[in-house]
Image 1 (cartoon, one colour):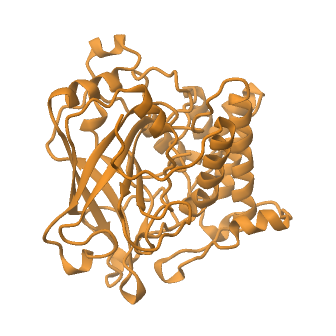
Image 2 (tube, rainbow, N blue to C red):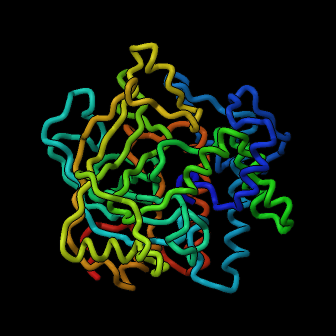
Length: 399
């Protein structure tokens, strides 16, 4: 799963149904209600190490642990059913990759002192595996259809203790080409995915009722995006992360923006190719490098306007007029032949999660807390189904 993820595509009638519901996805943690669920000891262990940083604005939603585990179980069941007789098992969503490329991530030689935390050390350089994808769960979905597009970055050779024990030298960043997520309340997200996985057509059509008006508008914007080339899109983290540690720590969001503005409007003749986004990436990288600026958007806790930017409300955009972005690094994707079966297989076995992270960039907010449980469990499930032994990448792989 990836972000949790862009909203799986639904018929337009479902979005219209949601608009008639006169409910919103804007409730606060205190307003949310969920059923009282008893957890087993093994289930409790999955959520027992979740922490909340009240000073940065984190606050648990009612029955968040039980809801998270229910989300995990629902997604696992979907994967088991979908791929029971059709291995390899792919990701729950973002199952269609346009390409997985080797890149260089270089931190600026000059940085403001307040931005020098974690991986952001002046002049630091890392190899990176970057996966570009469609957000939908159907790997056969044609690229001409509107959809959220993902950019997942895995840095290698990153020193320091990590938040998860399965990888010792990586730092992951996961993004899509929209600045906000479509839901806040974990229980509403659970209702959504349970409806979407139902065998009843009317139940599936009514799934957007879980989102409310605000969430449905955001989901429609995400699902309506059509692009020419993944290398020409801007991507956002959507949800916040920590910048720094100790008393100086702050919340931040991040983004990757092409170094130069390029026309990203798809051409009609591209639609004849169901996988034209992979073709477009290949054509570009056959002859030229690609470049992204990596930006961070720190929240300044010293000002009332910045302090009001929410950590828990994932549907809220942090306006750049209040919290500007700062360039901290450059991503260079050298020209390369990435379209190789063995390289594609290697990348499909990689696990991307924002919890592959140093402590200075700890994920914040409910959506990220859910990810900690769901991403790890579904990655393990897919590997077990596919008989894959996990291996941490080093950045020197050759295919």
